[in-house]
Length: 384
Image 1 (cartoon, rainbow, N blue to C red):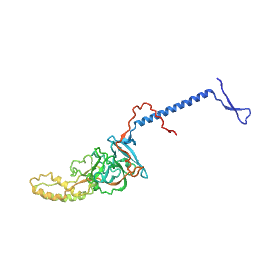
Image 2 (cartoon, rainbow, N blue to C red; image 1 turned 45 degrees about the vertical axis):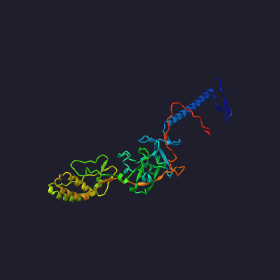
Image 3 (cartoon, rainbow, N blue to C red; image 1 turned 90 degrees about the vertical axis):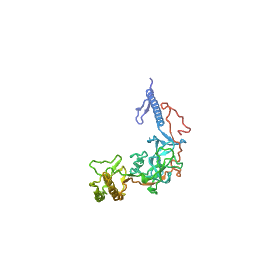
Image 4 (cartoon, one colour; image 1 turned 135 degrees about the horizontal axis):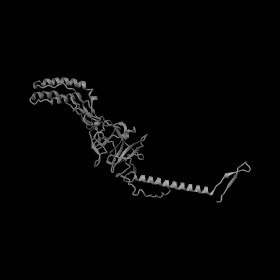
């Protein structure tokens, strides 16, 4: 096979030649390597594009009625509603929050509280990670409450979906950092968007009543058998210990008077030790009339074990003695509401960030033939 040579003379060295030799074999090898690499790169590119298109086909993209994309579903809530991440850029530091999207409305874990009925008037939010007052969820079960740890983990404001202008789809609110200007007892309604209801998820509410519950007194009279709080309750020994000296004093003097009234019956009450009180989890014993109420419950329970049916006069005297002590042993969760403000749209600050989207909302559909390559021609001007 003929060979072609190219020589060049090294400058300054007479009679010596230096250079390189290009052969047809080298040209052939280089051509095969370059063409093969180009073909391989094109194949890898096509495979990557195809894999990307297939993955995009499998992703759940949420859009509104006009086709405007809200975002990609990062997960799904307990009702299979997709949740998207919304970034609030209206503050000096941006924060994220999770927004659930149903066919007709937006939802959030947190609720918005209102001063007026029908979710009207001043809106307020609970503080982030408020386990003490949100331990019970919309299902009525302890431990399934409305608190959103996603918001708490950012060390920023709390977010929640409340009533919007159309009354249904919802508007996004955030904690302003200031205290709610409305007293707890003046809250009249709340927008709890996670509820599955027909129509607006607005409900009347009495926060003072909702955050209170009766204490469990089954373990208050100390017996030989050990007594434990029922499931979902915890003992209040740490709180009760503050009142025990006063309770023991009042119980001793009242018990002595009761035994004097029982002399005609031939029956007496033995001294007794005060046991435990139990409150629902995330609640604490309230200090309203605690000492008198404990003494009343203990003595009333002990007297209930006696047979006084033949002594109506003694019964009347005992009732007159104990009636002033009667009271409720209640538990309550502490609540701190904060003022809520509308999260503005980044383009139109006068509107809420969710106002730009119109129901009904929908999810993208997967491609029918994910295993077939689908070529999409370039749009005019693409690549320039």
